[in-house]
Image: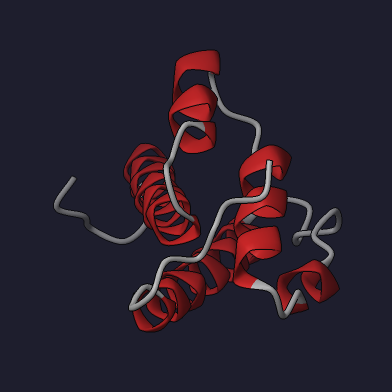
Length: 104
């Protein structure tokens, strides 16, 4: 469901969007297939609420993690949760694969 953008949330939501975009590009670049299934044009959705909803629905996550994304109360909160989730999984993948060192 699309979430309301609360007053004052736009700047933080845009920061989260930038992190999400960066993380998705890094994940796609590290993918063994070269990110063949990654459609970057979907990241250009101008509406932050719709962007948050589409990214949250597109991620393949365990049920409880996906549910936590979908239960966010605002678009900014959903974007923050998505950004944190992507950062965590990218760091986990790098650690397992012997990639860049992480703090996670």
